[in-house]
Length: 489
Image 1 (tube, rainbow, N blue to C red):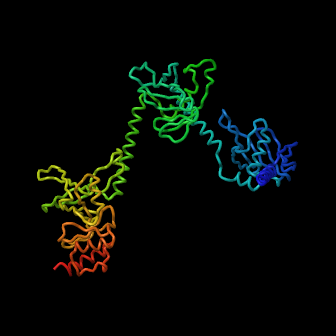
Image 2: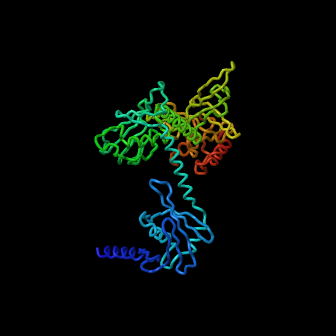
Image 3: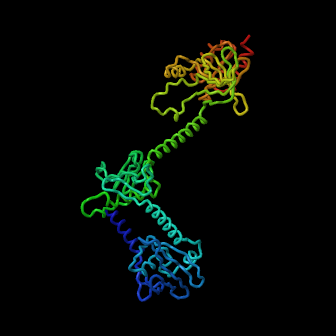
């Protein structure tokens, strides 16, 4: 406890030690009773001199953008006529003591300290890049003025029933000047005031909350803010001064503030909701399409690739090929379990002898082969049943399929001897010899189990299991070469 008190005392002592007391007495600027510079003049123009009076600057106060005015200072070297503008920041501007406000600003920026005027820093600022604060503020004011003129042109009016009118209304009846409706709802869940704005079709265009309001789909609290149907947030001030006695919607200044903010940001009601919702849907559809295309391009799936299929009869048909080995999340957002049996079907589009475009599906269980043009090289797949992988069988049962075959990509092939791979798992190799209908997975079992599977599959005692690497493409090619030379007699 003593340590905490001591720490607090040191903090307070430090703050007081560095806080300099400003005093102006007969033109002398004093910091902690020490004269550090001189000041003369009256608002809005003051002249600050160094102690030796060899250096002098003018500081002119400007009021930009009325109601409320934003005070800024123009620093000027009278000899060089160079100048630059600065806003008042943490140094509070006192409208009743401009002289002291100017000195406080100098101290705040370290242009004035116990050693006097910091001439180098002042000159660096005056001769530095122009801040252009007046122009920026005036530009902002002009934009606000123009926006207000545009809003005023709508001549917005609310009746006591909450119907909103405007001379800009474009309804079938030219005398009908309604553009929407506004209502004060019962207090929200936290007891705070809430307004809702609707267009003529009763689409909810915006909701305004007085304090700590929340809306589904938006993570932050809303206070004196409105949120639109397309999740844009704008500030609109609360003002109850329009109804000093009793309440009438037609005099509700808060309601009018909300409408002016909406109109000023392009929410002109009438039939905007329907068009806006449709635009949102189109944008969402576009985003979803882009997401699908991205997921597709990053997947192992094949979509409309040029190629050909050789069916179980040995017939060859050419055309765009589609084969899906995995689901695309953006396409399966229904929440229902995906029962698709991936990797078991290839779809070919082709033109028949009558010139008509046809679509035909081919199944992996029939030993179908298909090839596609992949960056100028031929990439082929074979429909094949396998052994040595119980997970593949479980996957087929999960998709309610009793077809235990799949299409596998061919990595090596010579006279019916093949090494293939699972398109989704580049390390899942399958060995295939002509005398076996099925392929053998070589990395889904323990060494002991694999040794037994290899012995049963190859049926060749001259191949010593321990002499081969069954986990790499090169190792499996070596197995097949030695098998052809030593076992296939």
